[in-house]
Structure formats: structure tokens, C-alpha cells
Image (cartoon, helix red, strand yellow):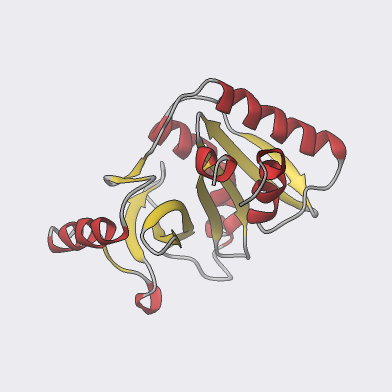
Length: 190
């Protein structure tokens, strides 16, 4: 069992990159502490999916969404895929799948976004354009605190922290933007 004082170290490592620079680490840790101190839970994520969902409940829920034609299987049948459009009506593929904890309860979701019409020659559909647009998309979906951007390991990360819900977004490659949804209460008190 991990000591509570080490929770922020776990949180930083779980995002897959080490934070570079004390100022960046201090800003992120300060935002996390401030939001956790509020004691507010925001478990709702998207399409009826939420933090703390049982794994079988997640499967059953996604199956119902699939039967209704709202979602379908993602690439290589390794995720759930949902399509929505940006402000210019470019279809965006949103793939999501839980990071299974304890084999059944879900405290983290791995997601990715990309323009469905992406191609190396479509410069307006590159991941850097989508990354910039995600601020507006997240505010529309969740409201709450404004996201803030930091640079880690030379890459821009967008953080949106509301209560226990942290969303860490970064560019994976020219096509894909990755978003990690995490329940901070769980990672503070495993």
C-alpha cells in the first residue's frame, strides 16, 4: 500500500512523462491540491460512462450504445469509437477504453481523438490543430475550471482539473491527440 504523501509522485508517473521544471510541477500540484481540498466528485465523463464504473457495467453500457448506433468498435476492435464534429463540421473520431484497476472497477480511461479525414497532406486536420480546439470542446462538455497548458519533455500538455477528475491531453503524433481521464481521489487513496 502506498503512503499518502507519495500520491503525487504516482500521479505524475501515471501520465507517462516526467514534468520538466519546478514551476510546471508546482502549478500542476497546486491545482490538484486545490481541487481535491474542495472534496467535490465529478465522476461523469461522456456518453453515460463514469469513474468507478464496474467493468461488466461498462461492457453492457457500451453494448447498448452500439445497438443504438451511437458507438461502434474502434480500430482493431481495441476500443469504443464515437464520432462528433468540430465547429467546422470535420468529423472527429473519439476512441475510449478503460484502464482496468483491480480487474473490475474503472478509475482511469485512455482515450484518443483524431480527425476522421486525416491524411499527411491535410494540414488543417493535423493533431496540433485538434489539440488547440480541445480547450473549447472540453469546456463545452464539462464546464468548470479553464484548462491550462504546460510543457513537459518538450511537448505541450493540456490539463483540466475539476474536483477529482483530471484530464491530461497531449499530442501523440501528427494524427492522434491522447487524453487520460483519471480519478484523483482514487490515486490519492489507493
